[in-house]
Image (cartoon, rainbow, N blue to C red; front, side, top):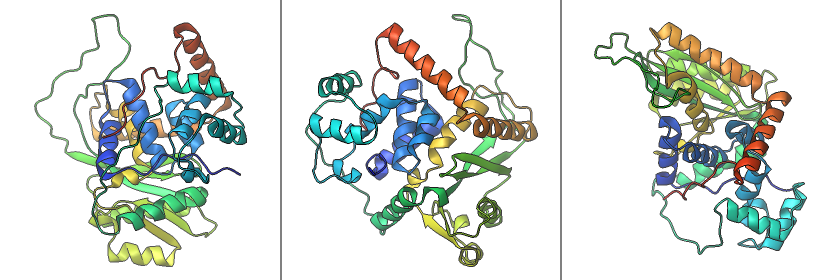
Length: 336
C-alpha cells in the first residue's frame, strides 16, 4: 500500500512563518488555507483531517503528491515525471491522464522548476527529534496526541471579518482598560480521531500540563503506549511529569527548540482563533471559555458528517464551474 502523502520537513524559519500565518490569520484567505494545509501535513496530521480542516478536494491531493519528493512516498527516484506521477496516483485510486494532470498542475500554479537549497537550524538533536515525531505520526497515528497552550487570551473587542453590506462593516468598540487579566487555553488533540479538547487556566504551569496529559491518557483507556507531541517549555518536562509518563506508558516527543510548528495541534489553533476570538466581544473569561468549548463540540461533531462533506463538495464544484478556476484561486508562494 502506498505511503501517506506528507509535505517535506520544514526548516525552522519556514515553520515559524507558517505558524505565524495560521495563528494570527491573514488578509488573504488563500494564503491562510495553504499555510494551514502545509503546516498540518508537515507536522503529521492525517490526509482526511487536513482535507476536513481546509475543505480540500482530490485536486489538492494531486498537488500535494506532485510537490512531495518521491523518496518520501517510498519511490526509488528523486523527481516525478508526468508518467510516474500518474501511475502513483492511480495506486491511490485517482486515475488521471498525463495531459489532464499537466493542465491541473498548471491551473494550481505548480510548474517544473530547478530546486534550491535551504539552511537548517544548528540546534542539537534537531534531526533526531523531528525524525521521531515524523515516525510516530506516520506509523501510529491512532496512538499519537498533541498538546500545547494557546494564548494569552484577553478580554477585549477583537477585530475579524464577516458578511456585511458594502462599505458598512460591523463595528466593535475600542477598549482602553483591561481589568480581566488573561488566560491560556491548554489544548489537546488526537491525531487518529481528529478531535480537539482542552480547558482554560490563568497561567501555564507543570500542574496544568499534567492535568492535560492525564486527560490524554484517559482518551486511550486500553493502556496501550501512546505518544504525546509537545514543545520544550519548562512546564512540559519537569521531573513529576516525566515520572508520571514513565509509569503510565506515555512517550513524550518534544519538538526541537524554536520548532513548535512541528506539533500537529498548531494547524488547528488557526480556526480556533478565527471562529471564536476574531470578530468577538466577550464580556468576561467565562463567556469566552464557553464559546471556545461550544466551537470545539461543534467542530468534533460536524467535521466528518457525510452530509456536511457532501455539501462542501457540491459547493466547490459550483464555484469551479462558475469561475473556471480550481478551488483556492492563486497558489501560496513557497515558504522562504
